[in-house]
Length: 105
Image (cartoon, rainbow, N blue to C red):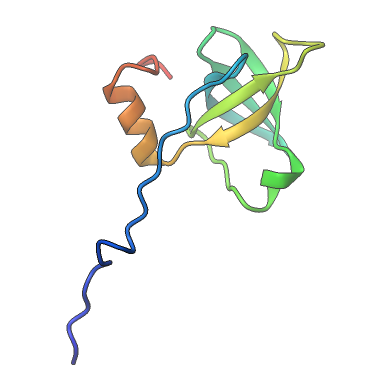
C-alpha cells in the first residue's frame, strides 16, 4: 500500500482572519430560534436576534457557541442584526489568544 502524504506546500492555503469593519461586532450564538434566525450575545453587551442571509444559509452551518461577526440593522441596532461571517474554531482561538474577543464570548 502506498503511504498517504499530507498536502504539499503549494496546496496549503493561507487565509487572513476577517476583522470587524464599520458597525460590525463579534458575537456568540446562544440559541437557534428557528428558520434562519439565531439569538446572539454580542461583544457590546446586547443580545440580538440575527438573521442568516440567503447567501450563507445553505453554505455555512452555524451552531450554538460559534463565534460570528454580526452587522446591526440601521433601524433597530440594539435588537436585530444580520450574520456577516462565521469564524472557524481555529480562527476563534486565534482571536481569543490575541485578546481581540472578550473571554466571556
